[in-house]
Amino acid sequence: MDELIKYAVRAREQAYVPYSGFKVGAAVQGKSGRIYSGCNIENASYGLANCAERTAIFKAVSEGEQELIAIAVVADTPGPVSPCGACRQVMAEFGIEKIILTNLRGEQRVVTLEQLLPFSFAKGDFVKDGGKNNE
Image (cartoon, rainbow, N blue to C red; front, side, top):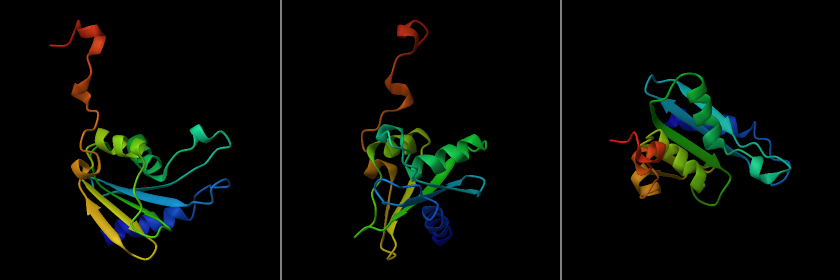
């Protein structure tokens, strides 16, 4: 757990945040044991920004790792930082069960995916092809 947090803290330093100044770092661990880190990246068109959590997860997936077991998120916040709704849903997509929320002072809160997003949208929640091929 400490190693995952160290990766997240280092990733935070790479954040591109010219608008908010709010740096966030994340690190996700795959089933293989490999760790992928990411930072938040802002854009003048705010909707095109990407959070640290999604950056780390997308890096892992782009490197071929889809079984993700844990993620650590860090920011300079009064208490452990909490992920946005979009990041929570992406965590749900990949079934990340151990979520470590922390800050630069070392305060931590470890939560499960169910605690973080109890009613996530799941693969089985939609009908493909208008229901024609869904059995």
